[in-house]
Length: 166
Image 1 (cartoon, one colour):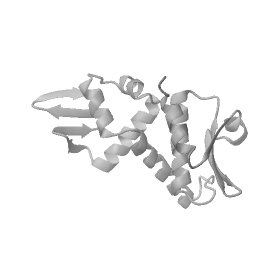
Image 2 (cartoon, helix red, strand yellow):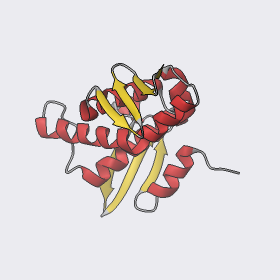
Image 3 (tube, one colour):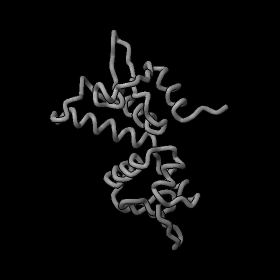
Image 4 (cartoon, one colour):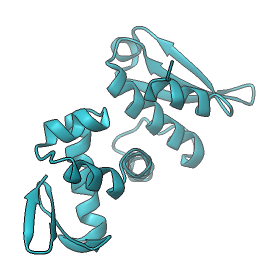
């Protein structure tokens, strides 16, 4: 039996950090995930009562914090901490969604964010935020594998005079 995406992520991440799911993390601390180090051992802790698609995103972002963040970064008013939070979020977008994924969805005829998020097994809001991030990185117009790519609120691929909107 094939592993789910979440199970695959847990298998990979647990090679370097303990992955723990707990109930009440959001209620007690106001977050869906956190990264902690105790006695030199890293822990990725996520809210158990979340859809699996959300857990994938939360777990990946906490893993990116493990790899790239320094210190406690809970103070949203602290500029350096906000920068670390954004860096982890941006790395999560790149780790979870690739242009190849989006091109594959285009070739399958998927157009709406709902359809694409469903195919990629991701929350729709995460997909929309990732597209916004890609727009800041690639600009509104770019090329990819023989396609002209136009990024606005969606991603449009154009090839040989035909166009489809995603």
